[in-house]
Length: 253
Image (cartoon, rainbow, N blue to C red):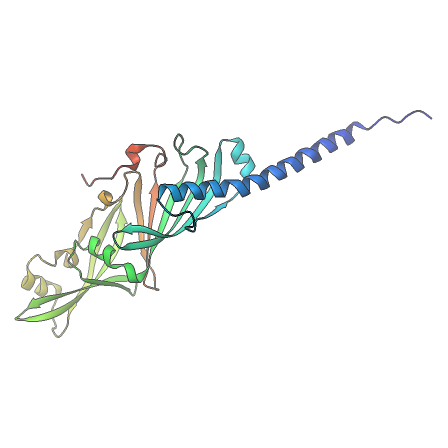
């Protein structure tokens, strides 16, 4: 009986199995290593302690993305990030791709979402109303701001309801109504009695906040939750990680 020769397809199959196992191992290794690297970079950039929670998840194939020199479909969640003085938010960032070396590459389709809890809306209200409002809360899908003011020889508590939308990176303020405790007055009558003091809440306004953000961050939406919190969304310029010009403070000019 002649010696049987190994079948060529068995050899190919064995190679495929080995490659598959190696690829699987590489995929697992990357998914274990990459999130830690990203989390460390986030803590470093935001001057956070090493134990500050940073949750990183990867979608798609980490190995395929690595071959292309980037990390694909990245989601990052970080609680308690300072937004304004005295205000901390929970932040969530997503990007279709982030380069392995953020200092030299560009991210793709980057966006960030910040949730401001209701007990910290004060600084946001102050910014949007140019310091006119002393209080603010979410009510029936609108922002209700309040201020105590002297009218007709007595202290009167005003409550103004305003709608908020984002247009071209700026915040559009739309007055929805105002009430003066103890008086049956229209917005026009209140405005006549107070001059232009309350214009930021009684008149339509466009509020530029680009000078409060890096140049590479563009505000896209502000939504108000029934729980009383506010969610702020923004798009990130591809060069926000690597271009100092995009990291510099924006302007309203």
